[in-house]
Image 1 (cartoon, rainbow over the protein chains, first blue to last red):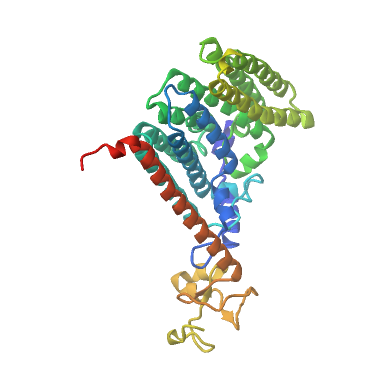
Image 2: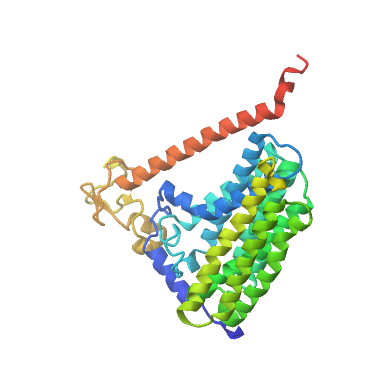
Length: 325
Length: 104
């Protein structure tokens, strides 16, 4: 199976890129995208998850932060995340064009020129880091800059097309926002913020590999060495189960370490059991429609799982009696 | 056309280019292709799209492109205004009451 990693994917990718660009390249190098196209470049759905987890980091951090400063930090983190998305779409336009899930994005669809996406992403990245550093603090700005660098250069440009461990290591980029939020509010990095980082870090592989299981054809066509393409579905199912077995106790650790209340303990326990159940189902069902259904269920539930964990942490921090529940 | 002095006319070799036109010919022709890809004839481009009468350096925008450009300009203006408000408010918050306690 590892031979797939070295397969020559250049032709289909080049054909797709040519098709996308020949159909839409403007004479003046500009594509005149609408405002909605530029908003799409920011990956609003990913951005919403980043905002939510960063908010939890801000709220859980020790000490008091002025609401206006908290809002500014959240805005900068959101813009930084969006800028990363725009730079990701600029670099990945060729593989986005051949994947059904991404071919309607503004760059491969020809509504925005690659150069425009690059300029947009760079402007927002620099702006977000500068404003965060000037108006909030230097540590959070440095962490945000590193997050953008990690996502765009380490993950998008290097790991994504090179190793099946791409989303394992690259998952760190998605795990940084609560730590950035924590640093913005407290000026430091605490143990709880590291735990929040680790929860998202270990959540990412089962989440993305579940998606990759039923979209492996897309990834194979695009030449992205996702685990199901390189190591096969069986190994992917085994890895999903292993990562889930690490994730669930890790997600419960804030309760056992006294950093979260009973409500969090109960929710993380029940939802964690759901994750293990669905991961085990993915491991058992290996053929046909039931296998795809199990992967889809795990992918969908993993989003709810992460949302529940962070929502309870948020409620416990905001509601006075929350931690006593 | 507005730029008669540049020789844009029925007999001119160089003609205005519609922004956003496809670049099959232009790409092949390199820099020179910028003025060869698509020409406007009586307010319509050769691609059949209606174009406006205004020309900027020989490049003519379609109505849809003009509408999008206006939308983007409004969005940029709103973002800049929001940034001004944000910097003002954050400055007030950071200075706090200390803004009044300083030597004259």
